Length: 373
Image (cartoon, rainbow, N blue to C red; front, side, top):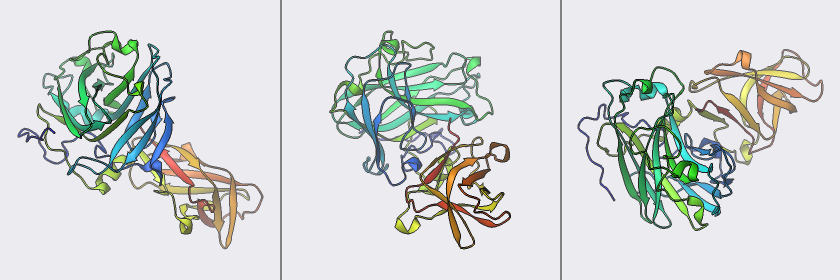
């Protein structure tokens, strides 16, 4: 295993890692689950916060299980992403691809100086292991460049935890400059499967545009159902040297992740939490309520919401099941708080009464707010 080195030019010592949740300690979307099956047909966030799958323009035939797994290199993290191939894909269409990636905000990439005469090198490090020796591609992509300019490196996976360290060149191209927006800046990705649409040219090992040069030389994770891939300890920093992985408390990591995703309740409930409250509310009409929920962390943008399970409205000593909703009222919500609306199926409510909106004897019910890149 490669030993982390000290980078004397890395300032400040705290906050040098640009990647959020590189330790894989936060997985809000999972609730009390440990994995998601049958990934490979569509893009999305499935388990660990801030790490998303992207697909090519042609869906893959391969499928995988994605685990939030209790394993990691000693002293770095006891959590990792673990991928397990469950369906092989040995007839790869040209436009197929599978990339696991995380995207940083534009404003958070200004420190690199890219797009200016002061551009600096960027060093990425991470820990990987698998079921056998394999070669994949790690890619740094600039979303602010009009041509989505990218830079790529091959890396090796073995059956032991190994730290990979790669340094990407400084880019002084004016079209690569970062600003002060909350849009996507750099995307750091691991290309694990690709057709000839991304492999038919020479790998772009300096900043380049185009598609055919992104994954040349990489193998396919979907070539066997024996394949596994584990990832943790992800770090991206300014400068030419990989420093020791930056540790932070779970509370700090969770707060950073909540800028992009928040789950209410924070996890699936035990039996005695089957009626957990999401927000206070008041009765607007005999069939509807309004609830306001201040958010513990200001989100990147006004979030969208998804709801799962059964909910109820409780006022005084009476509870009534929600028949429609809950939903967010966009015109009365913001990135720091959301207005909720829910309807019951009868005229059982009394206008003006106060109450609560919560779970209706459903330990798995929850709301997820999404402001992801």
